Image 1: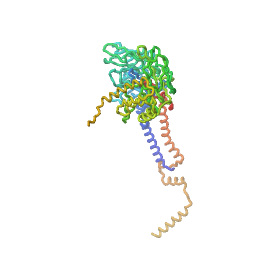
Image 2: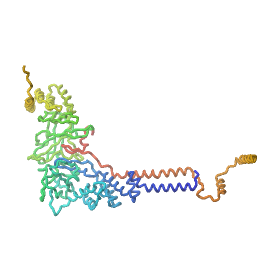
Image 3: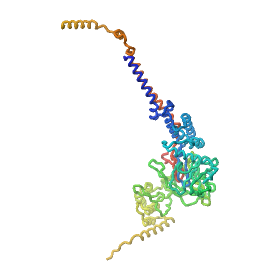
Image 4: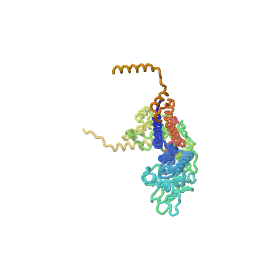
Length: 502
Length: 109
């Protein structure tokens, strides 16, 4: 290619100018195209370096997944037991802290790098490095109109951090000790909720008063409005694995001006279930539950939960019922499968959004029926009827086994399958075909009494089914009396039929 | 006048035919041009750039930003301090609090 020197020089100068312009624009180009790390490494003095540092701080912090959701916030009324299930390794926490500290050293802690400072403070807070968190949050003025609501969050963090200090000039409104297995728990969260408030936030941080327990496991709240409160605890999964919140004589306590209320929070070891567990398939007509004896227990009571599963087979809720009123004095209990349904005279009817009727399966087939899947639990009580512990605690240990079992489909009637699918009309047809099968007749009686539509059931029809039983039990006979009375009452309340006068 | 023009044309044609086999080299042309225009500046000098050199220069120009971009992308990959934390859904039921995997249906385990 032939070219004059002048043209070549012109081209070289243009190329240099373009390169210089490109180089000048590179930090902005990298920053806006999502390469903050490159901006920090190649252009640490550019105007985009601090915004890039903020962005990196966000990434470093978010990558750890650390926040209040790593904790279980447990209240005596049972709400707020939520945790994301995330576990953050110590290595991850250290690596994130190190990166954030480097950024802070490099870019200083002015308002331009507020993100870095704030996220490092949050990381220290949620990893219980209280002093470091406080040092970063204190004397740090976040200007009004800052892009996030950090001023509010900063205030909330500092209020919680302040709770570590025992005030010499005033008395606490409430004071107590948090214990797990009898040992005081330092550096844990305790939160309060007004007993008369029906609204709940599953994550109480920044919503309710919160305090940190001191080295002796003691928590203190100051300047509370006089009211009744309940206290809950915020603990990490590894702290409560294998434990259950103990029942206090009173779930709530009264706060009055000028005096200090006292309220301890105790977690007791949960009762260890022995069998059945691990999806055990139960065959035969009887199931035997076994658990480890609990110290001080006078008797035990059993409950079963029937899980609901979504289309992917995942647990999507469940119905829990007490297995029986019986008090078991030894750590073992037997229960007959597919036994008679306990009549309670109440209707366990609910309605779907499309108007269809759903009846409680345990009310039709019995609490433990063939083809069913269940999770069981046991509660221990002392001689005064106070609940000491339960197996319904936190199955979060590595070796924890879920008390889940299945019952063989042997002996399952065709109608039972339709009941499990909530197809009641088909179930009635199938049960009718069973002829004089006593179990089929009992389910038919329950279906007739409850009714499978929005209309009320017909007690006289239910009575007629039970009358056909070949071997009625005492329960059945009592139920027949009740149904007969209910049928008479229904007929009595209906208007008399008109008589034809000649 | 017309006769004279015809004569000139004839002489020109004869000269062209006579010089047909004579070819001036690039250097000779340069020399001739320089001799005709003795004050010609440095800037107007023509140079020959071989094609491979042009190709190399173009590749280099294209490669620098591509390499830079790739490096920027690789730097970004190092941001993740470690793998994302283990995330498993927690199931809260009246029978206890479990990890979702503990309650998976037998066939799904």
